[in-house]
Image (cartoon, rainbow, N blue to C red; front, top):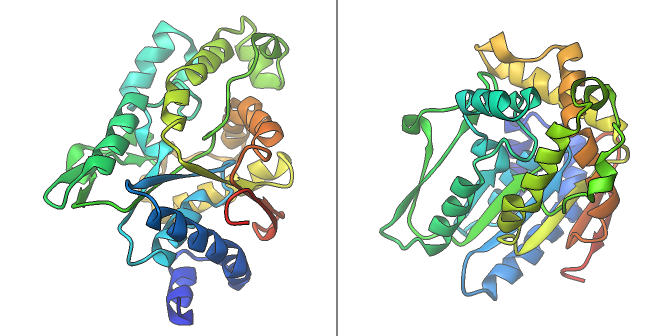
Length: 294
C-alpha cells in the first residue's frame, strides 16, 4: 500500500494525520492476517468488526477493503438492517414505546441480514445481490432504488456493528435500572427484557455467521458520548435533511438506550475477540491482543 493511497483515504474520510500511525502497523497487520485467512478458506469469510458508537468501525471497514485489494470485499453494517421507521412505530405500539428508537436488538431485520450474507457467500460470477441502505438523517431505510448492488463473486464479507459477538445477559441482571431512561421509562422491565430475549435468539444466529471478530475497545464508556457527538456533527455537515438529526440533549438520551449492552460488551468481549484493539480517547490504537496471527 503506497503513501498516496493512504493520503487519499485520510483526506476522503477527513481523518487526522495521526490516524496513519494506527494504520501502520496495527490495521495493516490485521489486513495481512485476514488476507492469509481468506487465502486458506474455500468460502468467503465473514469478518466481524465490533465497537461502541463512534469508535471507528465504518472507517476501519473502508480501510480494510482498501488494504485487501485485489480481493473482492463487501462491507455490511448492522445499521443498514434497521427496521423501517413505520415498522418500529408499530413495534412501539405493540410491545413498548422505547422500541420506536433504532439501535437495540429487536429493531433490526435480522432475517434479511442473514439472507444477505448467505446470498453473498453463495454468489457466482453471474449473480448480483442487493444490499439495503439506511439513512440516519431521515431515520428510515432508503427505497430499493438506492440500495447498493454487488455483482459477481465475493471473496470476503466485513460485517460491522456495535453489539456483534456478545451474548445475552442473565435475567437477574436486568432487574436494576442502570440509567434514568431505564428507571423512568422502563420501570416494568418490559423493554429491556424484550431486547435481551431478541438478543438471545435471532441475533446469536447472525453472530454464528462471523468467522473472526475484531474489537475496537474504547478506554471508558464515558468516551462513547463524545465520539457519538462527533459522529452526529459530521452527519449534520454531510446532510441537507437535518430535521431528524439530534442535538446534544437528545443524543445523551439516545445513548442511554445502548448503555446496558455497551457496558456488557466492554466487560465480556475483550476476552472473546480474535483481535482486540485498545483505543485511547483520540481513537489511536495503543495495544492489540491477538488470538489470530500470533
